[in-house]
Length: 90
Image (cartoon, rainbow, N blue to C red; front, side, top):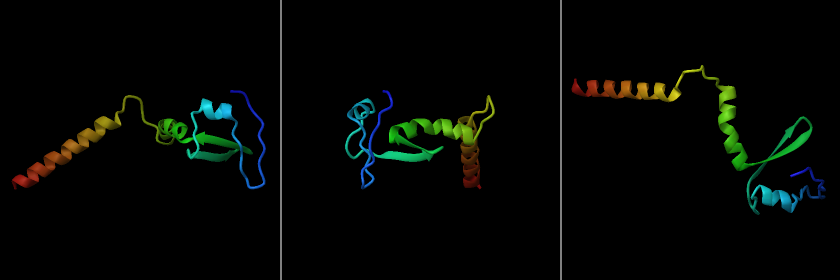
């Protein structure tokens, strides 16, 4: 959808045009997030933020190629379970 012009009302309300609402499947009461970025207002949906979360995680916590956090977690859990079993036998 192309850029559209809207007006900020006296009480701070911004009207989002129907085409954008339909395109993004937005309904009255949906949560939207407004961020200031480089002197621009960026409005995002909750779904867009959820979809972007894995990318942000990878940027903040880079993982070396070939490393599997899931495999590491399983190995830690198995080691803990074995320690608990051995402690229970004593």
